Amino acid sequence: MDYNNNSVEGFWGKPTSTVDWCEKNYDVTHYIAEFFNTLSSLCMINAGIFGMIMHSKGFELRYTIAFVSIIVVGIGSILFHGTLLFSLQLFDEIPMMFCVLILLYNLVENKSQKKFGIWFPTLLICWGVAITSVMIGSGKEYDNEIMQDIEFYVFQGTFVITSIIVYIYTILIVFNPEGDPSVTKLWLLGSAVFLFGYIGWHIDLHFCSVVNQLPLSIPNPQLHAWWHLTASYGSYILCVLVSYERTKILGKKPTLKWIFNILPFVRLPVHNTNKNNEKRLFKNKKELLYDDENEQLDEKVPLLKDEN
Figure 1: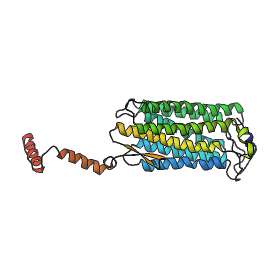
Figure 2: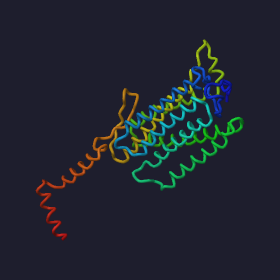
Figure 3: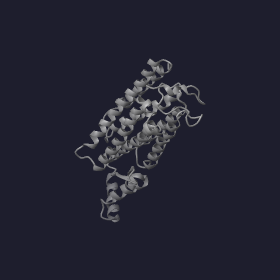
Figure 4: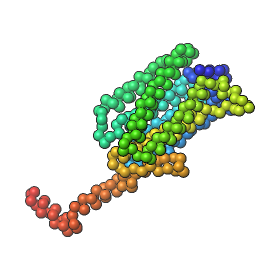
């Protein structure tokens, strides 16, 4: 890893984070360590808020939690990149880990009846807490390069492995014989965006000296900032895909809609988003059992008398 940018100090003092990205520290303003990485983190907050708004009625609480977790990741990312302090780096990495664990739970428990008991979410929470403890314990020694690597790779390894499991589950959804073509489009778009951003993430991390010395005096393309944009979009699409599949399994008859062919969201029929309408629909179905109101009343009254 290239830590040359750590030599620059600004408003927040000497960086103490276990990793420093390729953007030059305090290059734009004395008050923000990595200006473009901080600014691009707003994409995550916007993606989470938009997801909450568009999927607020008729959807389970689990999806609100998923979108909220994206917002929390964005806030943590702003704190981390704006200061490059280790204590605030954890506010970026820990929410990322729990965000992907939430998605994993939503993918595994996506049937009308639960596959596993309370032990499964408990296991995921305990796993997240255990990894968090290792990150905090090793990362406190941020002056020790070995401890830096332990903290960084424990987090990255856990995050990547969990993300791969999540991705495998999405593949199973997409390539299901009864799969929906609209879901396939969603999955392909999200995969392409994620891959593009992830390649940029690695280039920014491992080839910083090359990125800062591009020919023709081309400025640093801020690939980590682009990663924030692609990760925000990809995470949002993944949440949409999972919520669509779940509501379809529950028989809510969802449809995928697009805003300017860029932003997808799940739309449910009106009767699935209004409790009063649900009651009214149930009442109408019940009334269909009778030819008319008179027949309904005539049959109910004698039945009650016979029971007495």
